[in-house]
Structures are given as structure tokens and as C-alpha cells.
Image: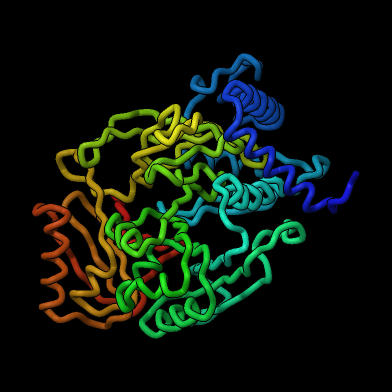
Length: 438
């Protein structure tokens, strides 16, 4: 009774497995995770002196996850530098070198397996099945690249975006729009490209949408038949989400990291709640002592159940959030909420308080003309603002921006506004509008 080719059969089977793990019986899910964790711990104790020292002489079956120490970025650097990948040629799973985007500072190197790459691709597609989304719509991705192209935009298209399943299901086209920077002219080209075809599922970081909103009415996205905006890479300003709600365009966010892939997907019924991708990770929230705008948050730790090349066990992502046993929508699985993203994405005050700092480029663009911007808290009482594409700023522009930001950060901050022809983003592939360096 075999009719499917091996590739679509394998992908469809994997999507079914993901759905069963993440939405099925809780006891079955917890048992499956326990077995995966036991396998991972056995692997690392056999092949890593670094991990044997952390685990001690305990057997994998005797280990309680919370008894293990947290894995910091510095710990990760030490393990990778001293041992490299823990997969060997005879394992049949090639390991490749990779690195984080560097959004929280210096990029961190690590290794991942071929399986990790396949899982991330399939888990992304599985979300459309889990939510019953229409596969026949187009998918349009907008990405920032650092090398391989000059200023401007580059467009690549494919006839389908669902891979091997394209032989089974009707699929829309895939369009990938790449850019280096988005000055006024490149932004115009981007919008022109978005208007050419139905957008369908728009996959883009909030920063790109913010750039578009400076020069264009976001109604252009509605006119281009944008079905859903899927955020990537950073949290969107709530005002930007409200603007999409006014247009009748739903907004979804995926919570992921370079190191472990998908961590959670935002609930389609309860915005701000993320169903944990339990087929991939175990999530903990510890050290709940962080107060941000009246919310008590803890540090997010993830254990990547498939991290056999570079192990991530109780890895501190540097994010702040809360964790619940279920979602208000009725989903009976671990759910992340009050997600604030990187601790480096909030302002630190001298009295120990933390506060969110949502500033849109559109706000700054109303006060000065620029191609790109970056804000950094460099001390407990100082924020530096860089405006790219400018050789100089007049006194009125500097005063207006400093006043605007001081009203939102607090009167104790010295706001330094600098003009620069091009912002030096260093090794970071992500380009966050704000980062706390204190």
C-alpha cells in the first residue's frame, strides 16, 4: 500500500510525531522527554570530560535535571574550545560549525548536527499544520545580510515553500528578499517588491517593518494581501502590533535561538503566550528576582534534547520570562508568558530597577533624517544614540532626540546623540535598536 516517495513520507511522519509529542497525552510527553534527556546525558558523560566534571559519577537514570548547574555562555565557550564537537564520523551525523548572531555581545561558536538542521526546518512547517493554516498562500521572507551583496536588495523565488510536501499539497510561492541596509531608496524598492505579488505569510523582524512604517502607510501590506505577520529575531513594539491589529492582520511571534532552534510558538488565541516546542526543548524559569514594569520574571534555561554535537543542558539564554503548566487557551503543555527577551534589551537603573524600552525608528525619524539607528546603554546613567547615514546633526535635532528619549528612559540619563556615515555593527548579524551593555 506504499504510494508516497521516501522524502515526503518522512517529512509528513516527522510532522505527525511533533504534533503527537506537543499536543498529545501529557504523561506520554513527559516520559518521552525523560528518555531523550537520559540518552543525551549518557552521550555527554561518555564523550566529554567537561560534562563528566559537571555531572559527577551519577548514572543518567539517576539524574534530576534541576540538580545540574546552569550552562553559561562562558561555560559553552570553554567546552567548545577544549573539546570541539562530540559527534564522530562513525556516528553518521555530520557536525557543522555555527555561531550565534552576536545580538547580546560577541558571537558564541558551537556545533550542530544534520539532524538539528532538518528538525528546525520541519518544526517551522509543522506550526502551519498545528494551526490549520492555508498552505496555498505565498510566503515572503525579508532578511538582513552582511556579506555577499552590495547595497540594495536581492530577490529569490521558488515555486513552493513546503519542501518535499509540495508533491502532496498545493503550496504558494516562496519569495526571499535580502538587503544590507534599508535607506530611503532601498526601502522604496522593498515596498515595490512586496507589492508585486500577494505577500501571504510575511516573515520579517520588527525592525524591518518599523523602517517601512517611516515612509509608507502600513496599509500597503494589507493591499498586498498580507495574511499574517510572523515576527522573527526580536520583540515588536506593542504600538506596531496595534497598528497591524487595526489593519486586520494577525501577528505571530516565534521564540527561538541560534543555539537550540525553536523554543516556542505564540498562541493563535492568546497573544503573548508561547507554547513550548516540547519535541525540541525542556524549558525552566529560575531565579525569579527581576522586576520589570511591575512584573516579576526569571531567567530562561533551555535543555536542547537533540544537542549531541554541542550539548545545551540548562543553558542560560539571557532571556527573562514566566513559565506556566498550561496556556489560557486550553493547551495542556508548558507555556512561556511575559517574555521580555534578552536581559540586554531592558534599561538598568541605578536603584536596581529594570524597565522596558520600546522605541520605534518612526519616533526618531519624526525628529531627524537617518538611514539606520542604534541605541546603547553604556553606563547606569548614559545612553548613546547613533544615527547612520549622517555626517553631522544640527543642534535642534540633537536636542529633540535627547529630550524625547530622556522622557522615556528617565531624567537621570545623559543622552548622547551621534551622527555617523555607517554604524559599525561588528560581528553581530542581528541589529537590535537598543542594547544594554551595563
